[in-house]
Length: 212
Image (cartoon, rainbow, N blue to C red; front, side):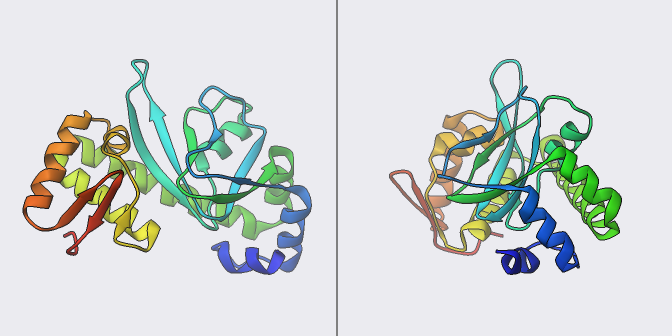
């Protein structure tokens, strides 16, 4: 499995780093929809996705949700990392976007890798920069984009993640990720269907034309 890690993790790590990551980590698999990390739980281990994808969600006091970003193969959750380093609780929830395999790296082992291997620290900084830009995009979308634009952006992202124009997703799920009402999403999807850009089915959306 070390060869797989060397291919998917986006930094030039030494064989020693890859060996240590697998030696220190616990590997677990999750089905689509399973919760990997809950809000307000203490972060003891940092998840590294070795196969599949996670979505990271923030929930407010009224139970409303918004999608912050996706964690893809070879990536980790910077919010978990920061929470673990600060010995704090998680401020987000991570859910399996599809069937997913995860390496759980204990916080103490992560700190040791950061101190011993500069390339691992560089990976963390690059990941932090990437997540920060994605969070800025969320702020920008909420503040300046209309809901139809945000829905199109989300459908584009999901199509790329699935590598397929057929998305197995409900209107309710899309509404939760966008932080809006289901009726709003249903109305916008119906407009896209009337325009011939998508086909709607039961818990399924098929993209018929490239979404621009």
